Length: 502
Image 1 (tube, rainbow, N blue to C red):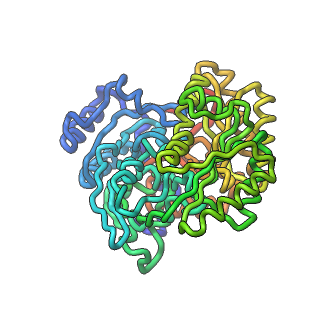
Image 2 (image 1 turned 90 degrees about the vertical axis):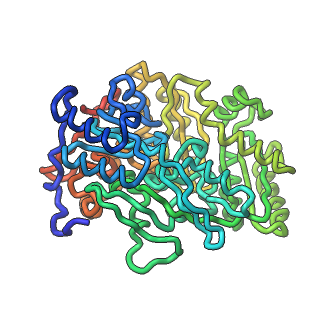
Image 3 (image 1 turned 180 degrees about the horizontal axis):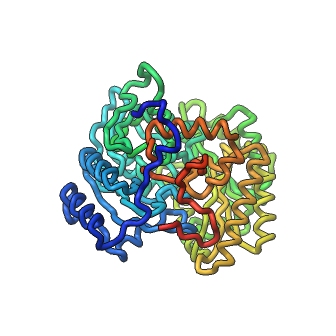
């Protein structure tokens, strides 16, 4: 930790703006990193680096200069210290599923890829926690816990590929957020390498620890506080039973009104996921689940808990849906049928690849009762720009994910994507919501921060960041906009088709 009196922007590191290939410093840096991880855990050929020039947010691209694959906390600490020694910016990356440019290496530098740190270090069912490495794929933890009576609750839609470390960085949510909360509600403690290379431990395996909730502060920092190297996560007892249903509606408005009334009736489903007609058609073409192609919307509804209560909850939900022009409903009567219903939801994004060469997934939030308005606005925006927009989202908590379909080879279409995205997110703010529910700010939404927060708010956030990351050499130019005359920010928001400076 640094002296709090020195938390000012003039501490921004004079990082190298360009690592010149073939130069003495570049060769020396390669040599020292090789000594830490070995020559088979290092990439610096331009062709190989292209794989890492963007994450799931493909609008902005910037390749790193070097990619390293550490296998231990000690290696990460040594890598970070060398980056400081050379004044080279660095950042961590897991599976690269971020949808807001959180893994974008602004200005190049060293990318520390954590996918080889994927072990479960401990499962303690008596005390209900697990300790995992940051590159652990979320679904792999779920699979490891099957049959134990416990599970790890956060399950983003990218569960099959996203990592626990990435989930912690962005405080991910997912379909079960409505009842079980987001990642921060399930992280008990963590180990991290700070941007100066020192190692800290925050929180612990018990639910409450004395002092400030620093691991709570750390979750959702989007990589700007350092690199998480271990996570102690809470295990949740499996519910006794589920009732899983697919409710088919003629219109999306009928579906959104049913959602509001279900919640108003005092029922908290474990999941309330909506797919609109565009998504239904894409899924059906790809996987043939038997969805009616002319339906306006499909709701995946799940309630869980004690067996004795679920039939009545399910009956009441169907009653509410019927009051809002329910067209048909499918119930999962077996675990296999439940798995199939969830498969249709989880594979929605995979099906979108059939619709267009590129897509941009937005992440806005509105109060649940304003869902009809934001969906109408999204439809109007689609018509305004002549751009197809489809929707699959966590309707129960008002978190919408309009997916804008385009061709990134067409600069005009990229411009339209940027403008349409900004209009949709601005509308979310106008309706009393926010610009992110689970994807984070990254580089994509950094301009919105000064619209959401005032100067005092942003200044206080800077102070918090600077406690962990005073030189701003770690994951720089993310989350917070440039602030103050002495800011050394390298971000120039010059969409469309921006390639970050290198």
